[in-house]
Image (cartoon, helix red, strand yellow):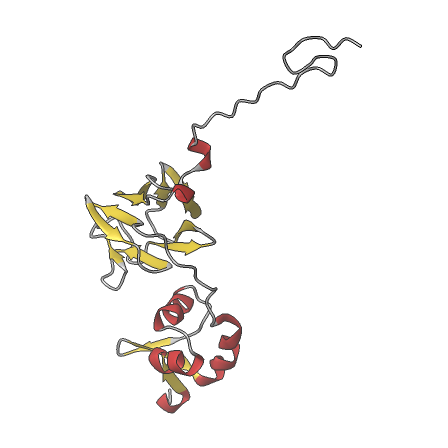
Length: 188
């Protein structure tokens, strides 16, 4: 392996105008081939041409204020459109529980909603008791990474589950064609 044929993720990020975090995500998702040497990810120069098609992250809209994950009664704010959760210390949210995988799940904000996606964990990702590979998150949802309980919190009404909306819509019946507005019959 000739090191002259490789660039670090920092060099590629500067060259392609993307963040190192986005490159790391592409590497984790096996969309970008890379080699780790001495704790540093290296990308083979011939692979850079293919990178142009996948390197640009989708346009990220601003996060709603005060969205966070509650871990052991400790609120951890979501400050990025991509938040990785797991046991490894390089995660955005570290969950120190032996049942949690090193890189367990990620929360993504896109198109005005949050999604959680399992990253191939061994213990599974659960939302409100149901195992999911990917699912939308709504304010107050219970999340479980293997056996570690978490809660998704967001005050925005747009992040409320529409299935739990208790608003009743009552419509006034239209008067019959031969009745007036007060319900009296029309006479010619």
